[in-house]
Structures are given as structure tokens and as C-alpha cells.
Image 1 (cartoon, rainbow, N blue to C red):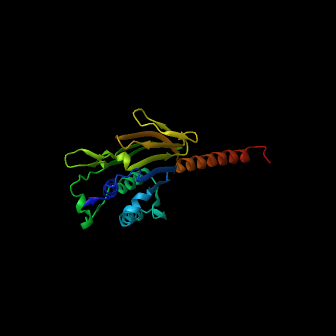
Image 2: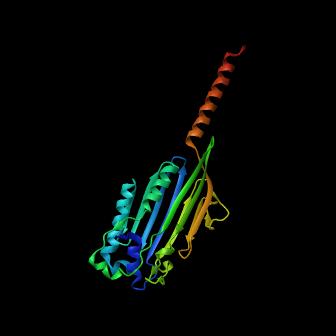
Image 3: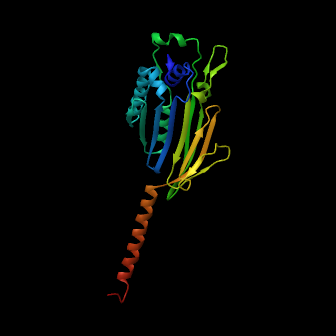
Length: 247
């Protein structure tokens, strides 16, 4: 049994190709109770030229995983797939995100026998989110650790045949309503829209550690404040109407 991502990349690496897979991954936070995980996967033309069946099966496996998590996948072409997976809170975000990137196994076929001498590693991908609720806003501390160095193709003696940088280009983005603050020790992103959009171009040759703090509006808190304001204004108006000398 082989892991689906290393399987695809290793086969491509055997041809000495580069820049085979472009993977854009992001998290969009709209409010305390609404957000989505977005992904865009683009396979290089060399991938589908080499083995169209493998490329098609890999993208289909991503589509199935998306459906299992309540998301939607849109196939733009044979080489490109867009994914959106909604979430309603931090617990659901971390569950769906980490579940999606638990690599499933695929059956080995006779065509894979030539790759048996190679080492098939696993990637490390883990997202954690700590939430602190306030009256009007929610404070979120997001930590993401990713290590894809093992995707480099290794010979049985441990020598690197093809580095992961030749196989995979990876971006991670975070979009928040009011911006985010990057914590010390985190990789530095590119910023836009008053820090509301942060984008990291991750180096596949080293482990990546991302840590940010951001705030999102709390619909429940805002609704509570509106109700309190209405009650207070109603009480003031009632007292005014009952006061002596009023019409």
C-alpha cells in the first residue's frame, strides 16, 4: 500500500521533471461561525502526459475526500481542481483540515513494481486552533506545522535522488476580517489588504511553522449588545413617557 501524494510525485520524479504540482491552500474566516478551507491543485502538463490515469485517479481521490467532509470540488480541467470545504467553528475547522490531509493509501498495481526499491515517506501536516471568546469578538491563535521534506525521492541507501522542491510548489494563505498578527518564531508571510490576507510561500526543503493571532466578530455577542441597547432605550423611553408633564 502506498500513500497517494508521494506515489504520484515519485512517479513523476522518475522522469527527472520539475515543478510538477502546484498546490494553493488557504483558510478563509468570515466570522465566528462561518469560514471555509479552500484549495487549488494544478498538475503540470508533464504529469498528465506521463500517466493520465494516475493523475485522474489522484484528483478523484481528492474529490471523494472533499465530499466526505461536506465540501464541494470543481474540476476545471484534467490538470486542475478547486476545492471548498465549509466549517462553522474552530473545532470543525481543525477536524476537517487535519482529516483531509491524513493521506489515504492506494493499492499497488503491477505497474508499480519498478518503484518498490524506493523509500515511501509520509508528510507531517497538523493544524491547531485555540479560541478565546469575548463579548464582541473572538480571539484565535492558529498554529500550522508542515514538513514535506520526506517527499524527496530517496534511494535505499538514504541518498536523495530528487528533492521535494523539484516536485511541489506550495502556498498557504489566511484571510480574516480584521487582519492577523504574526507571532515570533513563525515564518513570515506576504501581506495585503491591511493584513487581512497573509500568504506564505512554503519552502519544501525545510519544516514550516506558522503561528498567528487574529480576531473575528462574534454574532452572538453583537446580538446580545443590540438586545441590551434596545432594552435600555426602551426603558428610557418608557420612563420619559410616564414622567409628569409629558404629553
